[in-house]
Image 1 (cartoon, rainbow, N blue to C red):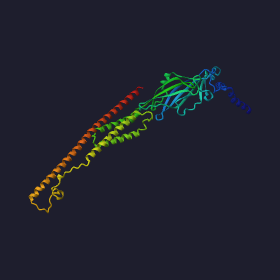
Image 2: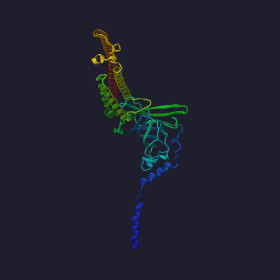
Image 3: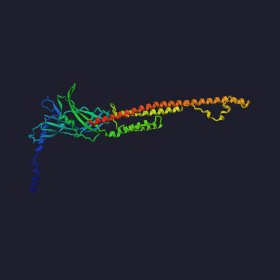
Image 4: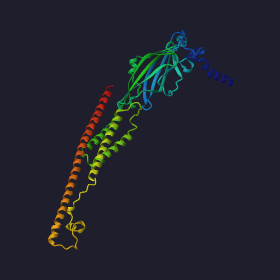
Length: 437
């Protein structure tokens, strides 16, 4: 009885394991072994060596990760696909249970040496070790990569700047006689494809135009496909945090021109504006991109406005200093006639007056004192006249300097208005051009 139950158990377990076939798995395994058994990945997969292998490219921008203006580098995330035909990896699907497509290790087959010429950093991409191969030998290789490329970034119109960066694909070693390039999709479809682009970043994707040309060199002719990635900056955050406050500061500084030129409060007011403007520029220095080859228009405007502010402040300081020196130039204004009569009768002040010991008649003394007294009065009147003339001359110079500096102040005010108006019109024009793109 025990032997009977053992036989039944073995039959119940073992028979299904040997009786159930796996034709799909067996066919896939057999097909993979047959394709790779005598495959040589070091040889370009064509039967006729004079025939070129055409690699079809597809390109799609996923996101703009970083725009480094100072180092002239653009970091983007792209979805890139290569498609080519391998004549050694084709099969008859009817002989392998209608298998139309399989995946093979990329390291086991031949792959084109397509590179991006503008690469300036290591390529960062997820490791995808497999590619798809269909029964006709067409291989499709999908490569999502992060590209750090060199680009000529122009920041003159910041924050309404539009950048155009190119990514050029070509073979590293093979000439056009061995590897040719082509477009997998229509060029218009590639140019207007924004389905996978992330709009949450600072930049917007405008278009991705593409061109094909032959690069001729001394070592041979190479096929190239260039994708021009056109992006533009979203300026709203910079308008609110940078442009509007700077215009407000300039308008406040314009109000200082309505104060009198010789007013001390004007110097205090302009100094406070200059300090506030300097603090604003220091805080916003990281927001404005810096480039050695190009200066942004807003940076030029900040520099010109600060120069005008310093010039106006220096003019006011020099005016106050000059007027102060004129008023305290050391001119004496003697008013000796206002002294008391006791001082005029002292003998020490009149050397020609007779001494007390000399005895003369009173009438003779009276006639002798009168000429001296009249002479002293005349000298006092002349001193007062000279003092008044000096004061009139100082006042006249003050009026002349005030007139000159008033005209200079008006000139600065007009230049200030012209710069501010030109800057505003330029920004509005750049914004209008930006919105039309």
